[in-house]
Image (cartoon, one colour):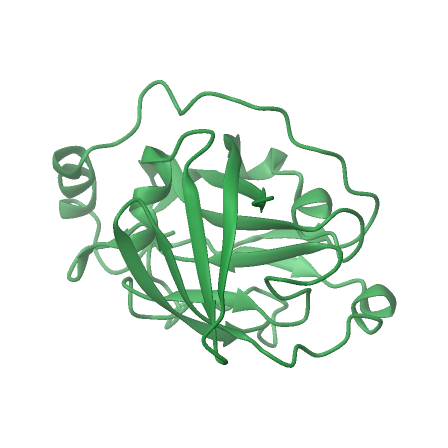
Length: 213
């Protein structure tokens, strides 16, 4: 996701909740952006240009999610490290993403990493015209079996194995599934990808991981 919290543009209204289905094991995107391609695209983009995800929360189900006693503070994958901030939705029901492209946001209304059930969702920007590549640009390099580690405030390290990397046009992203507050526990990392058109990326890149056993 590109950084754009000063001027929110558009967005996709998506429902949270519903049953969780296991994601199929998929290969990485066949045409992932490298640093040069990202730089070329963003060099032509005035301002930040993100169309952030918008979520219409299922308040009844999310209200049943117990507050975490040990929230996440850091996520590690592919040799990259991102501090994790607590985030929610703004007045327009859009998921807030940290301004700093080196940081991730944990969707606090939903389950936390290490929960007994549901999707723990982390979001982050892929890049920014002035800050450069974000930590979540590294999502596109993950493959099945890679380790994602989440560190908690109490110092615990929660290990997850990547089971899928998917890319969806934003209008087709199955956010009900990705933000599910119930069902088998998984870790979901979301950023942007695809083409950079009209000041925003066309797609969502989604990595799903399950607790390492």
